[in-house]
Length: 111
Length: 117
Image (cartoon, rainbow over all chains, first blue to last red; front, side, top):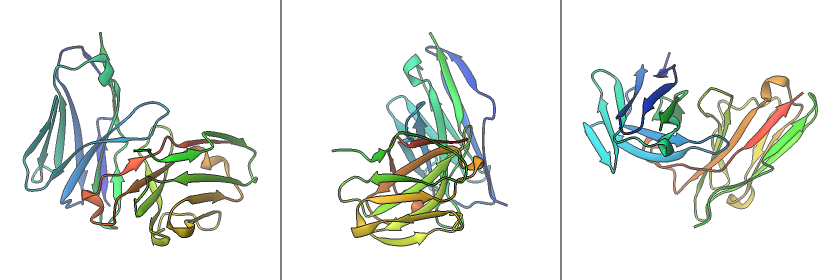
């Protein structure tokens, strides 16, 4: 069956360090992969989209990689700040042509 | 640009009661989605509309859930009768058009938090 797995444990890092979040998937062949941010009590907010033929994409302090051989995407936040604390969700298109979300990784950046 | 609006923000009901949620998408967005997000999980798609037609409702529990999008703008999601396991956040999202789901940016509302007692 199709499955999306994100770091099951919450991630705590020190301010200024690079946070790296993982999204692994099985039984998908996505052409696109998206990352969203969700703050408590709010809906997810789109951050980045990466295509299968793109190895890496950057936006300000954010960097996403997409390895279709490993079936994995890595999401990096460089020079992390306490304001980056949130839950980060990866999402990709499944066989039913709908966007399917992972369960998210809760990131806390400690001052 | 105004975002996706949802109401109410919170709702507490007894099991077997009915409840309705309302969503107003971003102006001009043809596609509207309703998701259910259980605590600790990612959003799960319930139903997807293109204008006022249903594109996908394969994960909608049709014995108790219904949704409509009259005139291709606002949408209502109803649960009747509610069960304890329906306690979740119900998120509405919209996107500009129906393309490949993976390449469409979805814009989410704040959600309605439902507690069924």
